[in-house]
Length: 455
Image (cartoon, rainbow, N blue to C red; front, top):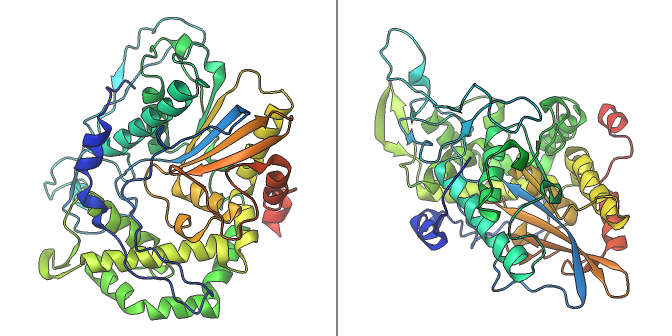
């Protein structure tokens, strides 16, 4: 995909109004014994690394950068009946073509451009009345989401190319980059947008292609693989059934019942957590769309609608829920271990291979994934309260491996432009000795994932 450069300031300003979706309360619940303030939280845009505030470690050499990013702004993944929103995703397009392995030129297939077609419903055939209007699939990266990652790539270039001289100005050897995404389209497009800004002059010849690694869905490890690890669902069910968590659901039950009625959504997934409500409401609020209203016999009732206050409380509830599940509950370590531990092992092994000199010329490893990747990683690290909230679109968690003058190595962890703050300060994330870092994360890496998932 080829994109033009985007103006950072203009893009951020265009969506500034959407960041007004904030909650003004603090967590006070019987389920967990803490108060977590999310009053300054915003979901629509992340914090970006900045060359102005970034400082290299004095007297140390940067050896490896691992960036784990969430995809950018997307359409909702949960559909609600009677949705009359219009989502357009055709302002930044992607062209593809096929060629034989090793060939230097395109073959005769030529290029193709995928178009999402949602025809006007004619009441006689088809199902186009079961989705919104426009040109977007459910969960598709929007044009703004592509721009968010273009901004992130521009900021990373300012740091690692222009300021540090660590990455090359032009990518002449793709061996310096390792790229992995999930099989889901939006993570691939996010990575393309980011790398397109990190190295904006790359060609489109096959020899210049960056290898984009994906695992088959069946063996994916960058989020909780419940098909291969049903024990995740078992632990989650135990957590949801606990007395404290059930009290939390009862306390917020009136709001859940109100929104379920307005949105006409039902079933266990809409009764046991706030994910779906969070997705439906925040995706719309980030774009300035009107919030859902109740429909009676297919006709909208404008007097019964979700409000901005409802969105704020849903966001608050969802922030509490995920922080509790992946960081603070008695089951959190075991859940997180099975959910993301295999991927934590991948990150650790890559660092160890770099220390041992087994990674060749690799300088940057980019993993483009989901909130369900970034958030459990923050739980593994025991991130502080302010950084344990739902990762905004295009969130970026960066691991830097540095070699100091005395030969020792340290790890720096940066989340959305800030050095990660830890709840229990088990290490300084600006320069954590690698041995101490490995010792901490090793507790979350399964030694036999298949056995642990089956028991």
